[in-house]
Image (cartoon, rainbow, N blue to C red; front, side):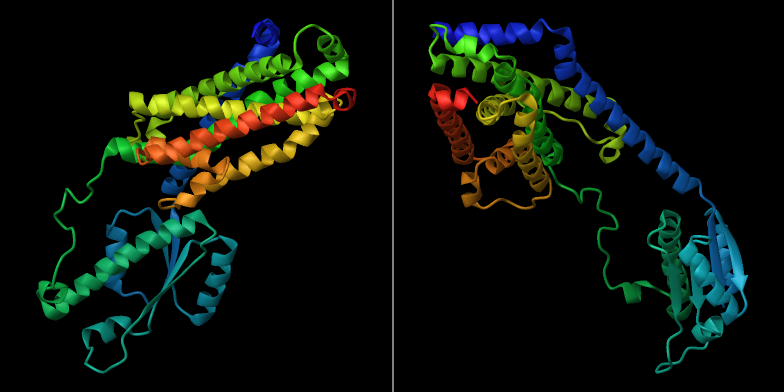
Length: 402
């Protein structure tokens, strides 16, 4: 136990005495993350404002006069051009493709007369719209014009049948202010749960990766590991001291990153999340469950990084070996972001993925004690097993002399 404390204290002192390392591990990633999110938010907001301020260019063919007047009276910012021939129509389609105009609205020839003199059994008049879905301006214009066309349809129907209620039959949610019934805290937690597993897994692994490779592969590269191995301290104590210190750094960095992300979500980016209805409110029980899970995840990831580093001669080589494991963590985090519905029970026995599901379940308040227990127990068991493997590797002169 004394040996573990000595190694743990040595590693922690080495890290926290180095101001550059403290800044690069705990401060710089937070700054980079907030700057990236701020820039992305600002650019998205600027893009939305640009779309809203854009003056749409709408070409029409055979458009009825009353529809043209309805469009102009709507207040929608647009420039209208009436086409007169098929030749102009074909040229306009090329302009749509090139993004020079936003929308074409083509009515059947004689549309106005057809709608007023319509008799049962006759072909129906029609309206076709032409847009470029890859252009944001075109999509916005199309959405508005389709709304106006529906309004125009209702106007013509009212002229034809009088009381539209005879055709409506029934209404859906026209006067239902209580349509959405949900627990806001649970809904917000579920929203956060889609993002949190990815960020937590990445932060935990990234926080330990650089320091972990230096703790073992770095010492082997500098030659200090051999001096450490000949000391009276048991090699198992050396392993545990290094793993625990790495776990502590990884856990602290993850807590710092996630806390910064949560604070930013409730302050800086609040207006950009779900129409300013985002407010992350975590209960004490959720914090405790997350804390325990993060502790064991830190332990597991630290053992993975330490084990890989044992078999590397240099820090660079260790980084190369660790990259596939890091990519696996990234993929698992991404998969959890796009999962829907309740996961199958057998998935809770899948290592690493069950951690992501557990974080989601804790945030949405839907996880059961059985699911949480399986996840924590399996994560701890894997960490213990890998620690045993690291101890065996440390006791092998063949491995440690590489």
